[in-house]
Image 1 (cartoon, rainbow, N blue to C red):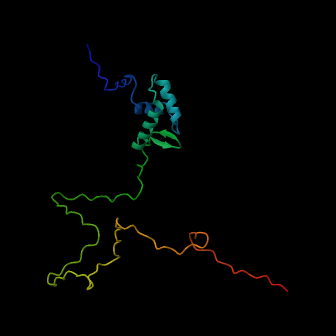
Image 2 (cartoon, rainbow, N blue to C red; image 1 turned 180 degrees about the vertical axis):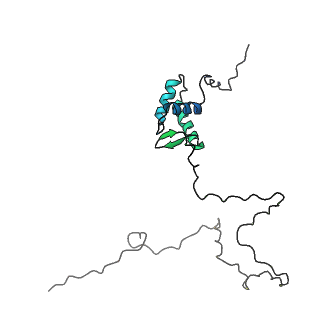
Image 3 (cartoon, rainbow, N blue to C red; image 1 turned 45 degrees about the vertical axis):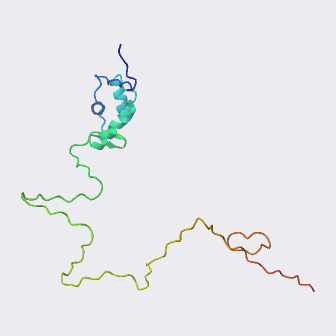
Length: 188
């Protein structure tokens, strides 16, 4: 009896042996379509679907992935949403920012010193100067700065001072409104 291992998922089916790699299919499509402005993604997809029969279900995703990959590596150039082969006479595309300085080759046998540390170099010490004494705290014996908060003790809960008995509505938050003096009616 053969024992089946239920822990491993079934292996994905192997790709069709007749199907070439996606970069090859894309390059063949661009060469065959031979448009002067390049070929857009839908034209490339239509050509691949008509030429190669059984494509994987994720064909659109795979095509987009490989087109982006080929664009980033420089195999294809994207101009106005059309993919085309790069012009061999065109200058290489520079990256962003300032280009690095060209490095001068060192003659053989030269020892390279380690790079200088960053920041301002320390002041030179005078070997004949007297050593400064460590600073002692000021004469009061108190540490500098704001004193730390006192820890609350669990035995005595904090109690607010008892306010005077309220004579009306409880006082609200914030500044109280300005009280206007009552004006007596003037009678003639």
